[in-house]
Length: 165
Length: 246
Image (cartoon, rainbow over all chains, first blue to last red; front, side, top):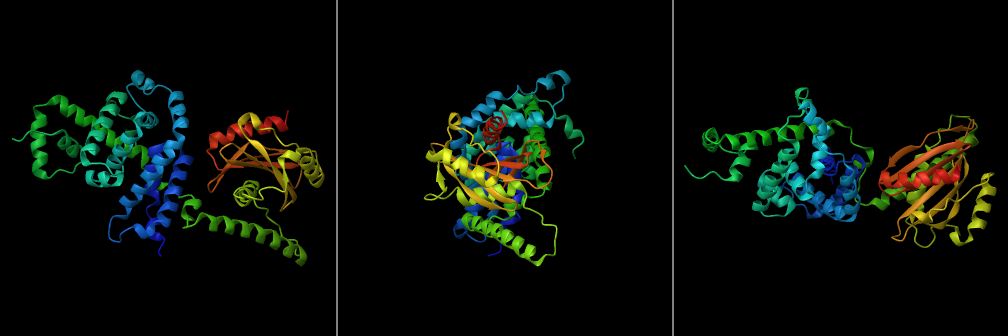
C-alpha cells in the first residue's frame, strides 16, 4: 500500500487540528490518532472517493471522543483565557492571536463547521458528510459561528492582515 | 426576484455561487446596507482565519506523524529493538577498540523508549513492587552509587507501582513507575551522566506520543515521562523536582 496518499494530506490535517484545538501538542496528538485510525481502517475507504473528506471525518470522530475526555481541562483553559480584544478597543486593531483566542470561545461544533468551510474550503455538502449532520445544520452552525465571531471581534480587521498576503 | 436566503448569503461569502446568482445577491445587498456590512465582516473573518492558520502548512511535519504505521505496538517494539541494538553495538564498538565517539541517545529519548517498553506491561511492569519501597530504593541506590529517593506522588493521585534496574548507555538506570486510579502510568528515569557535574534547566521533549520533562542535576539525569499533555506532566515534574531538591 502506498503510504504517500495519506502522508500528503498531513499538512492540512495539522492545520485543521491546530485551528480546532489551539495547542500545538494536543493538535499533533489529534493528527497522530487520526492517522493511526485511518491506517487501521483504510480498507473502509472507497478508492475514488475523496480521501481528504474521509480523513476529516475520522478526525472529527477522534476529536469528539477526545473532547469528551478533555472537557474539564478545556473548560478550565477557557476560564483562564483573558478577555478578547481588550487591546483592540484601544487601538482599533486586532492581532491574529486575538482571533485565535476568539476561536476558542466558539462551541466546538460551530468551530468545526466554520473552519472546514473557511480554512479547508470544503463545500457545504462535504462538511455535512464529514460531520454526519444535515446540510441545514451545517448552515445554521455556520451562521451562528460567524455572527458570534463578528460580535466578539467587533467588526475589526486584524492588523497583521496588512503584512500577510 | 426570489427571496434571498441566509444560506445564499453565506454561499456568496464563500464564493460558491454561479455568476448570475452572485449578481442577484449583489443587487439585493445594494439596498440592504446592514447585511452588506455583515457579509463584509464574514469575508474578513475568512481572510483572518486563513492568515492565522495557513502558516501551519509551511511547518515541517514532525517525524512521529510521518512514521505512523498501522500498528502502534509494532513501532514500540521497533524502538525497543533499536535501543537494544544501540547497546549491543556499543559493546561491539568497544570490543573493536577503535575508540569512536559514542554518541549516547539523548536522555529524553532513552526515557521515552523505556517508558514505551515497560508501561504497557500488565503482569511485570516492575521488578520490585512499591510495597517494598525501602528495599527498592536501597537496592537501586546501591547499583547507581548514590542515594536515590522515590518521589511521593500520592497527593497528585499517583501511587508507586515499583521500580526496576535498566541498563542504559551510561551504566545502570533506576526506573520508577507510578500509576493513578485510571491506570495512567508515569515513569521516572534516573541515570548517571557522563562528564563534569552540571545542572540544567527543565527541558521538554515530545517523543512520539510520550511527553518527557528532563533535567540534569549534578552527575545524574532525570526524566519524567508520561502519555499525557505537556501541562499535566509539568505539574507532576514540578513536584518531583521539588521533592528531589528540597
